[in-house]
Image 1: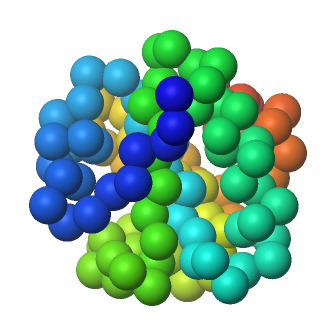
Image 2 (image 1 turned 180 degrees about the horizontal axis):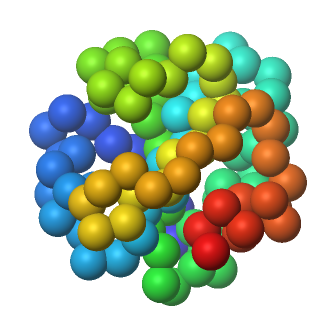
Length: 102
């Protein structure tokens, strides 16, 4: 399964109303560390059945990024039960992302 691309139009449905925890990768196409993180995000999207994996392009969706206070990318945010849970800034290993979900 591919990560879900978030936009203002589908954000509430995919994130706030999700019964599963949601991992959101905030990225930009021009960002080197974001490109390094992308294959890990893809892996997680394929492997995790109990978590929804999503991506937000900060250039295309600045209002979503600003609502989470994203100042640097990549930033990964975890939402549980519709509420902010944890955040990590910068490139993260797969192990660190799994710990973020715990």
